[in-house]
Amino acid sequence: MAEYEPSWESLDQHPVPEWYHDAKLGIFIHWGVYSVPAWAPTDADIGGETASPYAEWYPYYMYEEESPTREYHEETYGEDVEYADFVDEWDAEEFDPDEWASFFEDVGAGYVVLTGEHHDGFPLWDSHYAKYNAAEMGPERDLVGDLADAVREYGLKFAASYHANYNYYQPGFEGQFGHPDFEKGGPAEEQGGPGSEYVDFMNAKHRELIRKYDPDLLWFDVPKAEGDHVHAQELIADYYNRADERGKDVAVNDRASTDAIGPTIDIEGNRRDNEEYHGDFVTPEYTSFDEIQDRKWESCRGIGHSFGYNAVEDEDDHLSAEELVHSFVDIVSKNGNLLINVGPKADGTIPDLQRTPLAGLGEWLDTNGEAIFGSRPWAVAEDEASAVDVRYTHRDGDLYATALDWPGGELELSVPTHVDLDAAPDVELLTAEGAQVCESTLDGGTLTVSLSAEPDHDHAYTLRLADVDNPREQ
Image 1: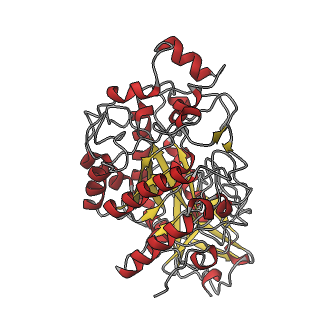
Image 2: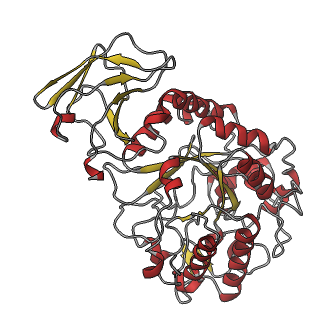
Image 3: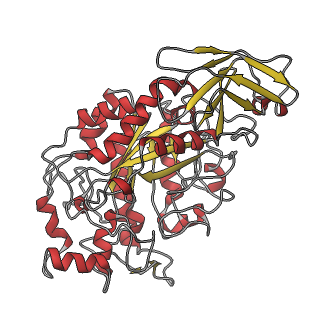
């Protein structure tokens, strides 16, 4: 059992746990004080100068001159209402952690990540270090602890994300919006990041969060300083070593510090490549990769344009069940997980516009989940020779070909060009009533599968090809 040192060289030796490879689907939850105003312009660009589609950035843009959020805020609430005034309106009276956890399990999620503290500096747990928290104010309950207990009762992994490296609203400290050493777009250059007092405060809260709730992974967000400056390596080494001592398999994402993520990530965490990072998995945001990645990755996004609940988003602003299924299948085929976000309303209810696509994904997985959970990438992710889009996965010696549209009477696959086949494999179509045997013929570099009537489910259609090798496992 390795003893991890607080250096990237040592931490980079940490393996990605098998449970994380197998889980494929996680639920992200952005819920906080920002869920009270619940507003952002839906047509804004991510990371824009004066506007963002992310409603959880309300406390940033409400203080920006000439921003749409500031204009909306003053028209709706008046010039004298501060962000902290929304705390008393956040009662979370309908929050039912057991109902949430049951729903997430039904969808097929393997893990849940709640925003433990977002950039507004408001912890959702009973923190010893900040009385400005959800247990003392607003909901007046330990939201992290309540959800952690419920999620684990259903056998799911749990974590609370931590965004304090880039808090733009932090009561008790000097600086713009209360954040120390903050300048628009990053910390004061001459200091290389927030002051030492804030760094100690930030890490004390994070260590408390880890100690109290024993998270299965650490999900950092958008740091604005190097690891040495914010002691990121020390915290991660302690986390890995503590987990190893107890035989617990954990993971850490790639956003612990700027020297972990390099120059290829923007203000919102959108990664442009997968070449240089530290951490167990890469976290592109509202985007994906075109090809199979050797390194593990996780795409995170909301069902709508925003992570936090945005009351002005309508059905056209949200993914349909089919779009969600297609995106998920594509991500998994390329060695990724999907961390799909829900943004509950301030009262603790998850809007139907978010529930409906998730429920559709869950229903699809009831029939096709064997092609997803526990699978690994195959020789290629996509079949360029097929008449419809196809994505490949491999599990337990079988190859799965998922067609994103119904191909009609037959489907031609280029499987023989990637792996040796002595004969056409046995092929079955997965349906809700059980697998249907399909005829298949082999002709040179083409495997043709004959299909009968369209199956009894929507969105995508999975074929199981028995006993097909995976070149990546040889």
